[in-house]
Structure formats: structure tokens, C-alpha cells
Length: 223
Image (cartoon, rainbow, N blue to C red; front, side):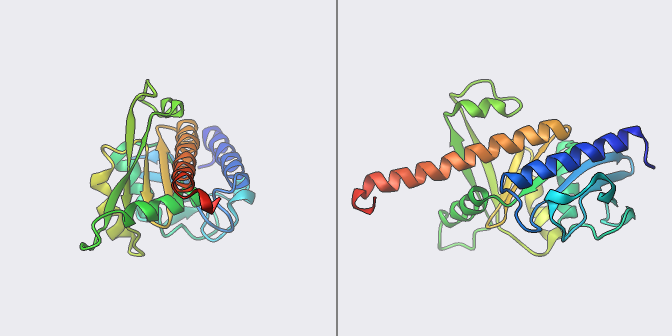
């Protein structure tokens, strides 16, 4: 199954994961990353679960079926494979990248906490607006706009979580947040997925820094 295209994709995914790890977006064994190898039947190229994603060599990547079964390579598939599969099927994505950045984890939890406390809320959204970097998202042509990233409550039942995320994907700006967990970003191929990840992480960083700045302006004695 290891042909030239698979070898090239494995090398590219390994390099992308090392870069993402260097930026502090998947510390420890955090994060999970996939690229589509085949669509019918669906076959994903993924990093094995429970390893440092910054040191995964191309030969260490595994091939995973839509049901989460490892069909080539050594190691265990991520428990979150079901969510990767849902994003691939719903969005036509060619790659899905999941990070645990400080900004994504913090803001996803914060956004859910802003909803009506009288309800057992399982979803919210985070608005990002009026920044030039928005134009890095496919389909956005001006800074004078806003995008709304869906936020879904976390759940260790991944099939259940995937079902709750599914209806949020059609309008998502190439990314979705899981509360207290982080960002899933995707694209039609690995290159566009990496670009969307970098753009969304930048926008999330700007959002929480803006919240902090506004708090300091309102309470200057805290500076």
C-alpha cells in the first residue's frame, strides 16, 4: 500500500506535526492529525495515539479505517478518529488537524460559560471579526466581516460527540472548538488544513488577548 503518493503524504504530515508541536499547540501526547489516503472505502493516515506528535516519523504513521481499525502500521488509533471521520464525510476534508493550544482550550471553555446558566448548554459559538488575517480562510475576501466558530461541549463518548458536532459543520469556518479541549481545523488537503489551523489559532490568540486588554482597561488598578 506504500506508493509514492502515500510516502510523500506521510513525510508532509510528519513535518506538519513537528511544526505544530514546536509552536506549543500539542504538548505532551496531545493532539491528533489525519489525512485522507482513500475515500471509498475511507482510509486515513494518522499519528498513533499516546505518542509525542513532534517526533512521529513518516514510517510511524498508521492507516486507519472509518471504523477506527488500524489496518497498517503499529500503534493504537486515536479515540477521536470518529470525529475526524465525521469532518471528512461532512466537509469533504482531505486533512483534519486537532490542537490543544492555550487559546483554543481557554476560549472554548469561556464561550460555553457565556451561555444561559439556567440551561444544560452543550453548544455555543465564538465570533471573530474585523481582522486582516480572516482573509486566510478559504472563501473570505475582506477583513470587514465576521466568522462564527461553533463550540460544542466535550464528551468522552466520541460517537455521541460526533453526532452533536455534525449539524454544526456546514456553516463552520473550517474549524470547530470542543470546550476545554481545543480546536479541530480542516481543509481540502493538508496544505489548506495547515493554513486554516494557523489562521484560526492566530485569531483565537487575538481574541483572548483582546478580552484581557479590555479587562485591564476597565480595571487599571489590576495592571
